Amino acid sequence: MKPHPDSLQRFLFEQSHVRGELVHLDDAWRAVLERHDYPPSLRAVMGELMAAAVLLAATLKLKGLLILQIQGRGPVTLLVVECDGELNVRATAKWQGELDGIAFAQMVGDGRFVITLDPRDGGQTYQGIVALDGDSVAEVLQNYMLRSDQLETRLWLAADAQGAAGLLLQKMPGEGGYAVAEQDDEHDTDMWQRVTMLTDTLQREELLGLPAVELIRRLYGEEDVRLFDTQQVAFRCSCSRDRVARMLKMLGRDEVQSVLDEQGVAEVTCEFCNHQYRFDKVDAEQVFASQAFASGVALDGSAAVH
Image (cartoon, helix red, strand yellow):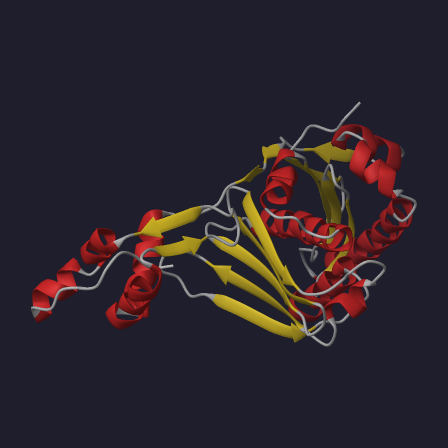
C-alpha cells in the first residue's frame, strides 16, 4: 500500500510538548525530476532538502515563502528549494562534473547554508547564513535549528527516483510557572528521548513506502498520539511572463538590445520548471514602452533577445 501522495501529516504526543510532522512527496517530486536530468546522487540530496523544506514551512505556519539554499564549493554549487505557506514547493540545482559515489560533504565542499523567510506581505525578510555543518541534509538542518532557535529538532529524510519523504520531531518550550515548567520539562525530556529512540529504528524503505498513519502507529504504538488533518503538498512554479519582463527591465534597455542584435530573440528559461519565455523586438518594445515614452527613445535593431 502506497502512502497518500503529496501530503503532510501533523501529530502530537499527548500530555507533552513534543510534536511531529511526516511528509510524503510523490507527484511533486517527480515534477522536479521530469524537468531536469539530475544525477542519482544529487537527486537523493535534492529530494531530502525538498522534504525538509515542506516540514519546516509547516512548523513555521508561514504566510510567505521559505527558501533553503545550499551554496556549495564542490561539484554541487547550488541547491535551492522554495516552499510557501500553502505547501507549494519547487526546487533546482547546479552542478558540474561526475557525482557518482560522492558523499554529501564532498559534493558540496566547504560551502554555506542559507535560510530565508520572506513574508511577502510587506513584513521584514529574515535571512540566516551559516557554514555547512553536517554530513547530510538532516544534520545540517538539525545543527542550524539548534543554534538559531534553541529548539531540539530531529529529522529523518529519504528520497529515490519515485518519491521523497521526511519525518520531523520537535521539542517545544514548556509553559506555566517554575515548578510546573520544571516538572513538564522532565516529562518532555523523557518523552523526547523515548520517541527519538523509537524513530531511530525507522528504515529508509519504511519512510518512503508506508502510509503516514500506518508508519506513526508502527513507530509509536505504545504512545498516546493525536493526529491532525492532513495538508496537501504540490509542485508549483511561481515564474510568469510578467516576472520575466520585470527582470528584463532590471537588466536595462542597452543589455536587452545587445541580445536582440546578436540573437534576434530574447529567450529566458526558468531554472525551476524549465519553461521558456521568448521576447522578440515587438515584445521588448512593449517591456520598455513607458521608459521609451518618457525619454523619447525607442528600441531599434532586429529581432529578439536570447
